[in-house]
Structures are given as C-alpha cells and as structure tokens.
Amino acid sequence: MGFALSTMQLTSPAFAAGGHIPAKHTGEGQDVSPALAWRDAPANAKSFAVICHDPDAPLVTPGRYGYVHWVLYNIPGSATGLAEATGEHTQGVSDFGKLGYGGPMPPEGHGAHHYFFWLLALDAELDLPQGLGMWELLERVEPHTVAMNRLVGTYRRD
Image (cartoon, rainbow, N blue to C red; front, side):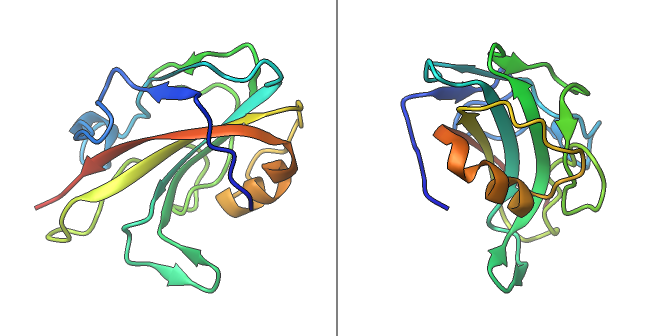
C-alpha cells in the first residue's frame, strides 16, 4: 500500500498528540472510542475511514504485525469528526474478533504502547460492507486514498 501523508490534521479532545490515552477509552475503563476531529481534508475527499492500530503489540503473523483496535469506514466526506463512543458509520472487525472499538489493553508490565489513530481521506464513496478487517479495508481503499494522517496516543498497564 502506498502512503498519502498530507497536511490534514487529526486531533482528539481526550488526549494530545503523543499523550496518554485516558483509562476511559481503554479496556480497563469504559472502553469507549475517543472523540476525534479533523481539518484540512482535501477538497476531493468524498469519504473517510478511521483505524486504530497498536504496532507495539507483540504479535506477528506473515505479512502482518501489531494489534488492530478499531476499523470504521463509510464516513461521509462532509464529516469533520466523530463523537465519543460513536456508533455511527460502518464498523469493521478488530483483532478482538468483534465489531467496533476495543480500547488499549497492553500486557501488564509490557511498558507503554503507541496507538495510531489513522484517518484516511478517500476520493469516492465506496459503500463497503460491515465487518471488514484492517487489512481487507486497506486493500479496498488504497486506490482511493488521497490523504492520510494520524494521531498517536500512549497507554501502559503496570
């Protein structure tokens, strides 16, 4: 997959870039997705997708690594963010084996993990089916990705 990093900005009122993700948004808390906001999306963005991925997770399978916490897509191009605990749009399957968000929950004593919340701007409305995993989603949206950027937060369990 090619990359289309851009000047598009992704933020959250729950945590600063590089900051600690509050327990509320983790498997130790209420396990609800954080609110997200974005700006400076390209004018040709017709839809968006969001992924949360932990590359620090000690899981490696052929061609894949880390742990997927959230896959969300079919977000309209008019959107500029997501509400906390959103149930809107189309949910994909996380590595927890369920639809929707599953918050950070690194192994105890494993140190801080980095959680990459990726925002992808797409040049088409793809009307993708519910239940895609991250890798399936990326295969389908790659030809349509016109911009992407990320917000990274950290979480650790001691």
